[in-house]
Image (cartoon, rainbow, N blue to C red; front, side, top):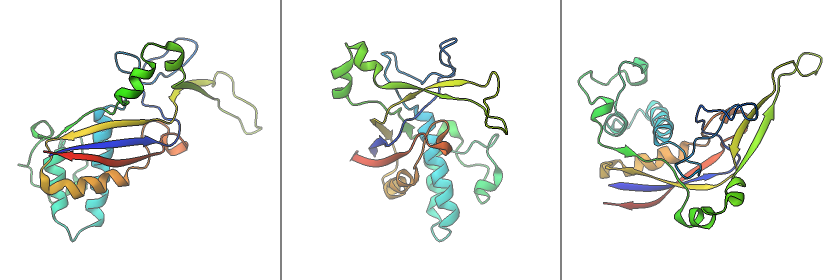
Length: 201
């Protein structure tokens, strides 16, 4: 089963590329080869796996959650806290043996076509956010001014491929649980709604 889903951003958001633009911006957003914003599949997979672990912890009556997590996300036994899934055997699938593939979230072809040859329009997809440290007297601290590039609220689309049919409902629950993504998501950025768009075989 392949599940197409929509990532509707409700606020400015930032998925970091780790790059700077020198003296102007300290952190740039990650972009595709044509300069359009994307949400990496690895980040989406991590958020959905975190949601699955929360649901697994709260739904002890449904033992199917553990198998869903193993089959869909895998287990990173060298990095993960063993308490997350204490009942899972060591001989279960490792992360690189999982068949499900999480694509990056991208803009629709229609949106891309409308701005691809217009740099001025493309630049309106981004803006800069500045912040600075403040001392106890409310005065800005020296050398604390930081600027990051953020993306305006947009709708992007992604896909999870090769998920077992029996896990459709669980994956939909995970999508609904994700409410924020990207950097500084606990301070106002990255509010989002994830919802199923289409399911295919």
